[in-house]
Every structure is written in C-alpha cells, then in structure tokens.
Image (cartoon, rainbow, N blue to C red; front, side, top):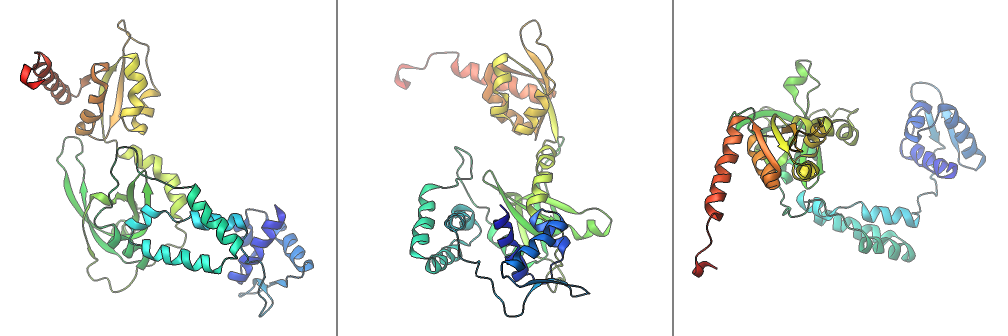
Length: 345
C-alpha cells in the first residue's frame, strides 16, 4: 500500500513540480505529516525529491531527473484498455481517435503486457442503455462535445417537457458547457449559465442532450470561457444526480394498488418516484389495496407507465388522468368484449 503511494507521489511531483504538502496530501488522501515522511522515504530510496520554500516553492525533483517508475503494471495496462467505452466514444465522434490511441499504446507495451491488455477487451464490455431500448446518439451531441472540449459558450435551445398541465415549450439560454455524462443510455450536459451566475445564482444546470433542439455559437463570444477550476464533474454528478432525478418528477398522481401492483410499482415507474411513494405505505383497506401519492414526470408518462399494471392499479386523481384510464378501459372492453370473426383467427 505504501509502496504504491510512494510511486504515485514521485509521479505527481514529476508531472506537477511545485505541489505543496497540502496539495499532495489531498491527492494522496493522507495527512501532511505522512507526505513529509514519504518524501524522506523517497530520498532514502535515491529519488532526489526536495521541498522548497517561498512563492515558487513546494516539492520538486532535482533538475533533469526523471523517475523510472512509468513502466505499466499488467493490471494498469488492462485498466487503460477498459477505459474506452466504444458506444460512448462513437456517440461523441471519437471512435477513430480512440482506436488510434489504443494502437499507439499497444505499440509501446512489452509483448507480454500487450497480450494481457488486449485480452481484457475480450472479457469485459459495457452496454450502457437499458434493455429493449435502441441506443441512439442525439444529433447535436458531437457538436456539443466539441464545445465542451474547446470551452466554447453556446446558445442552447431546449425543449422543456410539459409541467403542471402546461404544454411543452422551447427555452433558449447561454451555457458554458463543462462536461457530458452518459447515464443509463441517456446523455446529459452539465454547464454554467452565465447570466444566472451574474445574479448570484450558483448557475450550474443539467440538460438532457436529446432535448436540445438547436445549438449555436454564443452571440458576441470571441474566445473560450474561463473554466471553473474547482468544478469536478464526477463529484457534481454524484452529489446532484438524486436531486436531478427528483426534479424531473414535476407532478403527482394518487393511485390505489393491489399487493401485486405494489410489488411491481418500482419496475414500471421512475425509481425516485417509486421510492418516495413506497416510503409511506399505509395499511391496506378492506379490499387489501393501498392508496399512495406517486410523483411522476407528467400525466402522459404516468399513463404509459401505470397502464402496464392493468387491473392492479386504479388512478384516483387527477380527474383528467382517471378519465383517460376510463376511456382506455372502455376501448379495451369494446375490443375484447366479443370473439373475433372466423376469418380473423
């Protein structure tokens, strides 16, 4: 464990001269005292790492010294080959570049490592989209990815879904796109809204890329935006993903469920909404059914999802959705109320 940390520390100092003990402690997830002891251990092992004071101080290696610690371990080579996700790279327009990079990496590896690394590709594959969903890349994803790489502010038009009975509408705003996230086969862009930030709002927003209907260079932008150096895409997504999922659930329906419908609810609805509903399950009524308030994205989505439960769910509210289910039930009764003609069997 310590040996791996010492190697990592030497490589960090080599690639980032001037790192302070505080910065190294943060990167290595240890205390500053441990960093000082590790620096002494590296010196005793012959690695000329030294600490300098002053404005340009921090930890440095002796001028001209390069560590010999960059040889890849077999496990590290396997990990590098696994880090490319073919579908995601294709969606971003980077599949050719990734293929070239793997060829270059393969050419630099020892023959024994090359065989180990390439074998990992035959053993592991990530298929991000859910079952029964045809993976399709949003049309504007490659262009948006180029804006992310170039730190280019864009004018984004977004189709906002229906909310509280209002029809869908298009929203246009400026965005400093900081990153892209692929979640369960759906691409999201995370960015900062400049005008909201100027008004004191934290300004970070997340949008589904497949709802972006237009993408243009920001009017008057003559260069890249200044990327927030403290922004960590992975940490942001981890912290906000649950809140974002709940934010998509903009309305609620009241349903009455059988025991089987209650068990199947998480399988047919949004998990965040089902979890919230199931956290407050009342005692069954005289018919063995329970009544729940279920958060949903919209009445249209609720109809599509709850229809899968058939007679195991009764929609009590809102009235418009209950009417829709009543009309659906009448249509089914008319369709199945008689036997098909002989020539239709």
